[in-house]
Image (tube, rainbow, N blue to C red; front, side, top):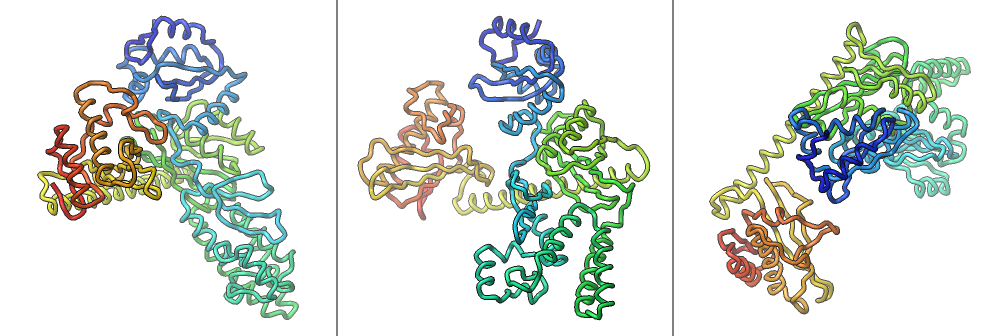
Length: 539
């Protein structure tokens, strides 16, 4: 018998009957709360047994799962024909809904890629966050825009394609009409495709193909071809061309020296390891192509609390390669994952070639895992240091505010209010919230002014402050006023507990009149002890 005591399920008998009717087959299950909000998406080859496992003894569940189970009120199932189909459906549902209790690749929709428009007459190379089926080639995803900028700058110096940061379509057409290249051509940072006769389409496209080969890790082909062209130019007594190719060759070889530091078998593989601390986790990927390390990127995971390393790696792989334009033939992992054969099958289908997942325990492959782990730990340490620095700055700022306003303690929660209107009509008020010195957008509120006619900031402030603290008073007393008194932002109904959270400091945008109006409203409701500041004055 499932134990539904610690859930938000209203009708236990009806819910248990529904569980009995869940088939013992492949599929995806979706847990929902009382509002129908999706809490978690999971898959199983035996839906009934997997779903019933959530309702055993609570002490048998980890803390994260217990919190989720306590909010479960409803569920939905989708039966699939195979485990692979269940995996694909689970990935799509997680990507579309980002449920709060699933392991999520942080900001996965915003990762940048390098796009090469090989389908255009004069191809461009630039950064994009939108991968489309448009005939272009995509490389990535990269962990951040800075990585893309550095890569694009390096590639531009090596291969002199149109610089994306300085050659938009308008500029390209303008120089085409002028028959004169821009400064980047003189700096040898652009071959000058805008001016007829400076570079042939074949030569320019060859440079673009070299960029693609470089990003694929096929640098040996580039070096071999450049050396052949340089030698041919020298034989033809075209010494200027030979010198130009020599300089490009040396620049590329200098870059490749860094890739030669680590060599493994002559194959394409991604090395994936992680570092974690409390609820934070960073996954480091080393990209090895043709036996050479060509790049390394760290990615952050959300919802890592109480999850195994294998679960984190599996979730990362499915989310990361669901967006990645290409899949290598080998994945080296720091730990074993569940259902590796199913994931291998999906990766093979996506990459159109066989993919092997391996957990090396010795040799050079293991050293690569250790290197990836060290890089992940370094990134995690950087994140913690940044957080500590941010926290320290917040404490310093709050301490200074406390001293200047002569407060009794640090203002951990600050609420600020402002009135605005459109040509004296349609007045609204905004409340912004800071907690521990940082903005808290989820607590921002917008109020429509209801009782004040025209542009009267003093009366409007009084109304808004009265409504805000009246709601706090009702929540603290446990009463429930008519829903009309509950303010909404972005159509979300606010809970009484949120209104009951009182500020340590109230900021009013205005002078003495607005300040006195706000203080009067707070005094009437019994909140005169909360400091209020307006303009250069305070109470």
